[in-house]
Image (tube, rainbow, N blue to C red; front, side):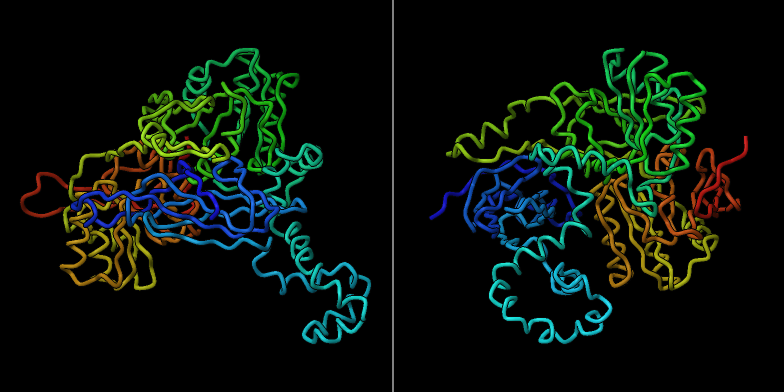
Length: 538
């Protein structure tokens, strides 16, 4: 029997949890994960390389909550250097098996047109791809097909799918390091940025660099540099060397203009590149203003930076990475912003580690950091939206049966339930408070709209709102402002409706005053915005 290895869980993603689970006793159990790979393949989990070998690898997780969904970031390096990256998901307490024996799951459709031996006659053989017997008559080709078929899909995998992910193997194979560094400088011209550019207010820029304790000895990298204000400030105020990385040519132009205007060309470099491919090894400070899912995607890359490197993020955290410091900054408009600091270093021994250490730990086990996810608290106190205001919000948004309505901070679910009941549309309510989630689910069942309405317990700042055509909000202005990068990813023409509080700095297209009826002391306001959000003129 092959040895089983104990892993602490990496990149743990907490998904929506059934409300009934909160009332039950928590049951923990280790989970067996079996991975099938070629015997000479290498497996990396959560940024850490395992040393086990063989065609079947067994891994045992630490005790996890039974019934909840978890996931690992997995990178497989095949013998020829081809890399495959996957996210494997499994249910706590339920054994899971994954098969990655081939570098490419579905090679036939893409591999046949790209066989190198037949590239010389593409016009004649492309129409005949449907007749494989005509391609395989030569005696010389048949014998080696069994040996080479496994390699051809591996070779075909590289150009279409793995070029953006070559960074991981590059860091482990020194010979491939130099060519990989050239790729970020020339991303595909049609590659679009992952986020809409929203400038970081200058007071927040100053606070981020101060929190990171930047000095002239530092090298500051800003991933998604926008107009270059962070790297310019780092150079101008602290004399630090700095590099701004962005994918958008317009942002690159603005950054270069900003660098020239401030006379820091000798200290600042601006590079057009995909930040997930960029070489960050020189950085001692990295600044971020990205969406939560992009921060999470960056974690394996950040984990490999030099100990002592500081990571500073504006508004969005790193999931279950506990920040070394968390401060709140007020900008020139009176809006509050979160700033988080992490320092790359050796993981500290936690109580969880101590409990795991009671079990036998093989010398070749892969150790991946497990950090307790902090208990998330609602950003606002729950105040129900009067029913007349709910109906007005949906009316203003001109909801139809074809819409998908999201309510961020859904409370008792009255908006999504009303949308489904009155208009027959699909709707999703998100709330971080388990008590609110419970009330929403009861409301959904009571109104018989289970087939149209979904309720999830989530942090609204981690939600992908792009599938929604209508988003409803009853949040404070600073929270509305914090949601802007997510809202801008919605399809053009989508509607955002806010109750009482506007989105600071952005134009609303309509405003309505609503009398909620007897028993309410004041009138309420409803504001309508159309995506893409347009900035107010100063």
